Length: 190
Image (tube, rainbow, N blue to C red; front, side, top):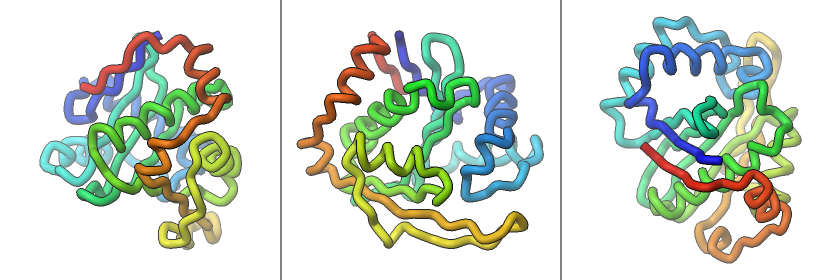
């Protein structure tokens, strides 16, 4: 299996529309900070704007030639950045999330060279929250917790962070078995 992470600034029109559709699906957007449906033209303008930004990077991920999901790094500085990801619905609960997360963390610490990686997970998304802690060593970090009013009610996001020093010492047998099981033959960031 080959994993490819393609920068949003390099996407084709068809790929931009596929991300838009994936992002607006009920199962994906209801786990996000912005849970509203994004109009296609607004989405296209946002993707075009990314070409002028140096503080964020968004990637469409592929397993072989099939779209797997999206990984993003935002508020990038020399010290830290925030990150997130979502999978295409057909890959939810497939184990691919573990593989995607491993390579995203590796990219953040080894390519972006940040010292601290942070995220905020919707309180009801306990599977992802627990996986960040159990499999990757994230710790609770209230600095990144927040509450947001939405038309669907109050949304609570739980903050987590991971230090580069902890990542360098990190080992998890489950993740290592997952990487072997999925037989990742190569990873490319373009």
